[in-house]
Length: 192
Image (cartoon, rainbow, N blue to C red; front, side):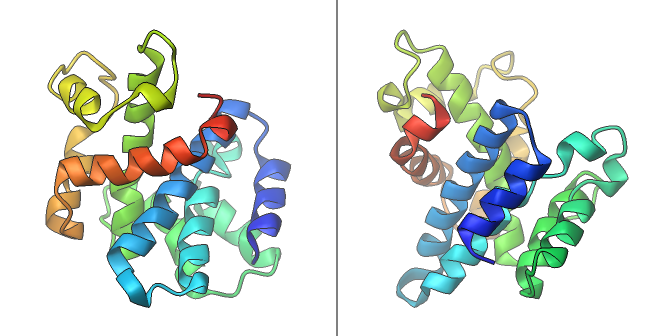
């Protein structure tokens, strides 16, 4: 499945502009993580696959928010119906639903999704308290400064994000830096 086809699928199933922006943020971070984790061996197809998983991971939320046990399974089904045949992509999308059922990721791609999903929201929260409300004024240091304030973005599971060190081999400040840079590159799409 191409990014354009995945984007069409997302837009046909998700109407909330803010939820769409969340999916764009996770997509761009997943692409950056694919390049970081796979290094010089990261093919364009691999980066595209990781990006599509990020783009579609929450695509069925408006249909499944009252039934979390179905979350992400429905989007994986829709993606397959739309022509996606890559099992790693389909399982990667579906794995997002596993996280909500207490199951842990199995592959590097799934761990990347697990760790970066909540981080994108935290970075956006940091941007929104900046005077200009722009991602361009957010730094790794400003994110870390807010990290220890448990009342700030208190719904964000920091422990989930911090697993980047153990499961991905990326120190938290570096992980934040990768995500922030990727999100800053699509700041216009995110409205920030």
